[in-house]
Length: 535
Ligand code: C2O
Image 1 (tube, rainbow, N blue to C red):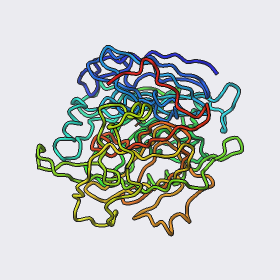
Image 2: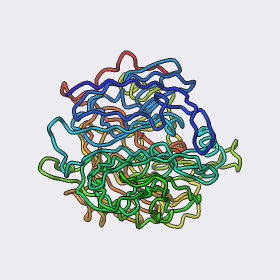
Image 3: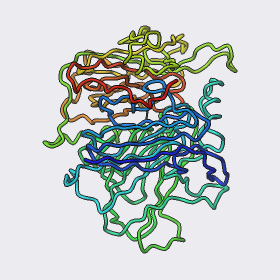
Image 4: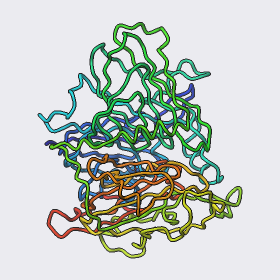
């Protein structure tokens, strides 16, 4: 293994999209930001320097950060922000990790433009568990607003209305040709007839789950969220913010130009979003002027298409890559995830949308939680997060009262080091019944079951897949349904769990676990680095 050094300079950059130019926050002036390349077990050292007027942190989404929580990145959870003019060196090891994950800012709204892919190749000489591709291509999906993203978030937090939808979806930073702006460029995936490509697809969008299709071609999914899957063939990929999908593409069609399209998925339409993003699959030897072969995207609320994709995902579970699903449970947890309405004196309608887990809306602390945990500083958080809802109701029924009067708090749930956890995430049908792509920091977990309606603790566990469930770091909690996950809490520290739709996180749909230190010399968290920012 080796050490990989990167320099991330956070700078404002005037960027033109949709025929308009505005300054955006970038890493090294790029949108999307640079791809970080490494191999399994490598040590990655990234020096982040903040040259903008906002506080910044960077999260390495899907990197486990074994005992190195100080480098995880969520602001006020594992570190104080890097202030303007300051820098911080993230230093972590990709122990036993491979595949595609992503990095992104983890403070306020900066993630919209501060993001990029992380590609972790296998150790030298170790092959992929699938046919070797001729080439690899990184495909980062995003969203673009003509207005400032700050305005979008402010609107969503102050009006009690859903957030403004984005003006474009982007593929490697480009929306493709759009109405009223014909000069807009498009990403071109250039292929050679007969060759096979590994596409590393990253959804770095702010609020939108996405479908991706390539006209006339099918894809073979081989990995999600940095974990190998049993290969399966599909003509569409469904990927939520924070999720990644690796898929093989063979250029086995007539030499021509084909449309690559992305479009949003939202099973309950709270806002109509017809905005697609377009790119091209261009065979070498095709002329560049003719129109591409088209493809039809599913409807915005095509739930069966999304469900069909997620239902096809299984861990590879081979001899070399076994699925180590915990078979006994120390902590059995049940969390309701939803959005409701709370009174708000300063808001436009006298009410505000609020995200909550078990009726607790998470309040961001002003001091970082990990330091408070490490040094036993009291008054920063409490460890009394409820293991199950404090108010019970028919979660997925027709709820007339959407006002649950959630309580606010910086409440954490304490897990014993190396204990096993089963967590049922129950979606609720309150004001906004929506799918919640939920991300857990510090771990991968196994998705052992999911279903519609209310989770039934008597019947549903009988159907759990404990053999080859898919392993992920971000999983959808379906609208009007539930998802069950398991993991072993073998990484001490403070670990954030939240909906990866930025607007829901902003509303409070988040909580954190505190995982105690182990006893052995290699089990405890490392001491805080000397350049760890102060609040
Ligand atoms: Cu990708 Cu806490 O986020």
